[in-house]
Length: 313
Image 1 (cartoon, rainbow, N blue to C red):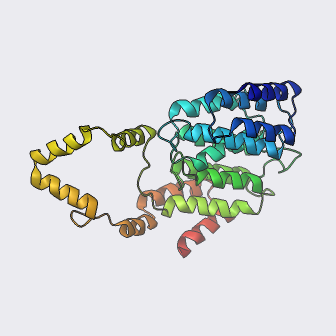
Image 2 (image 1 turned 180 degrees about the vertical axis):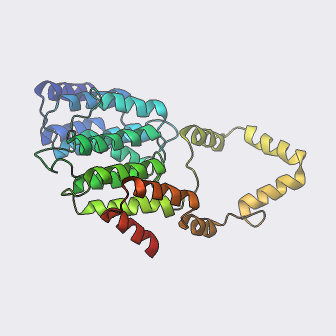
Image 3 (image 1 turned 90 degrees about the vertical axis):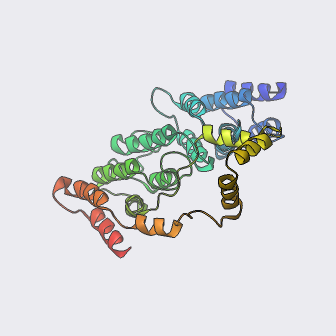
C-alpha cells in the first residue's frame, strides 16, 4: 500500500464522507495494476465503516476492489476458501447485521464472480434478506418500502441473484434449503402487497429445485489448487509419474490416455439423459412438496401457480 493511498483512505475515514473525486483518486492509486493487496483491502473496508453516505461511485469501487481481492487474491484464482469467506463476513458484520445494502451487494457480487465459494456466504446473505422480510428490519428495508410483511422487487432481484449464483450451495441452481426458504417467505408474505416479481421468483425457484438438472458438483478450492499445481509443474516429476504409470499397466494406461485425449473409448456420460431424468419430479420430491402444501390444509394462489408450472413443464 502506497503512502498516497494511505493518506487518501485516512482522510476519507476521518471525514466520514467520500466524494466522487476522492473515489476516483483511490481507484487510480489502489488499482494501477488491477491487483488489490491485503493492506489495501483492509484500508478500503475501514473507509467503508466510516462512510455514512455510500454513493453509487463508492459502492462500485468497494465492490470491484474487494471482489477482486476475495475471488482472485490467492491461488487458485476464482475459488474462495473458508478462511477468506469468514474474514469477509467478520469485516462486514456488525453485531449480527449489515449496516447497508452496499455490504449485501458486495457479498452477492463475490458469489456471482466466484467459480465456487463456501456455503456460509450464501447462507449469510439469504439469512439477512429473510430476516429483513420477517422482521421489517435490515439493509433492504428503508422508508417503509416495502410495507411490513411484504417482499419487494429489489429483494426478489437480490434473492434471484444469490440462489442462482455460481458460488456456494447449489451453484447456478436452487438447493433444497433455498427452496424451503422460498416457502417460508411465501407463507410469511401471503396476501401482502408484494412486488410483482415475487410470484415468478417463487414458482421458478421451487420449480428449479424440483425439476432442475444438478449437473456435476463444483471443485472445491483445495481440489482446484491441487489440480492447478499439478498442471503447472514444469519439473520432470510429472513425466516420470506418467512413465511409471505406463510401465505398471501399459494396456490400461494407454487406453485411459486414449479415452481422455480423444474421447473415443470408455463409457460416455449421458448428459441429455441425466437432464431428462432430473426433469421428472421423483417420489421423494413429491412427498417434500406435498408436505409443504398440506401444512395449512389448503392450496394458496402461489402454490397453485407452482403446480400449474410443473404440470406445464
